[in-house]
Length: 310
Image (cartoon, rainbow, N blue to C red; front, top):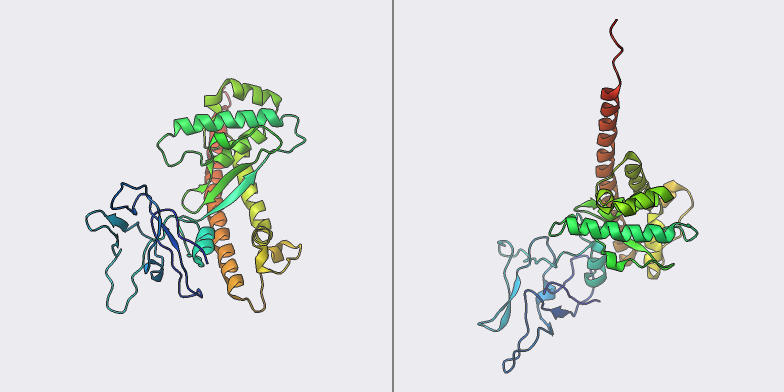
């Protein structure tokens, strides 16, 4: 069904899943497999029993006991007789939990939705935009070094060719990725703006919107994503044989199954959870947008000259 990897934890299945799971158990920061005769490098090993514990949000509590030469798990909370003992599978989005462990976790704080951004291939300023975006992301990352709000996509992933594509994230925890703000800024620049920005990278590398238009563009991206999201799920999971959707926006916002099987039910759960992530991020960003509009209106009002007294 899948394998466990990442933070040294095994992966099980919840009550809604079917079948048994055999998992490779990877020990990195928390667990290690040792050769008694040699100081071996950490390696993959099977950890029987770990897949019997279901996931619950918390902190990693699996570690390797050097003295006893065994893998240990500490319960995250007290359990009364007959109650299950749960473990934290690691900071995974729901798409990975579904892929590797066969379930979707409601309200997952580590959930995110990938957003792929690109400039039009026939844009005569395309190469200049890619070059500027690369420099802005480098500057923003340097300014936010050691902070959680640094752009999530490294500039080394940017290739100034026809194959360029930028991946950003809308996350459950932080909302709209700041990379989307930088992208929208560059996308709306004319030739003179691009030249000015290349001369003053620091000024234009701010990861908060610099004008009202940038707020509107990011919100529009979220709205378009919500509109096409069911189709996005269909393309991402063709093996589920999901029904085609009508062209109307009302029908495209939901998937309807007469008798959904287990795979289709899980797909609907994934869809619902990821749509909630986008909706929350958009609502938070719209609140910032309204605050910016209010501040701008106040600024304009305060700049209006009073009529001269006679």
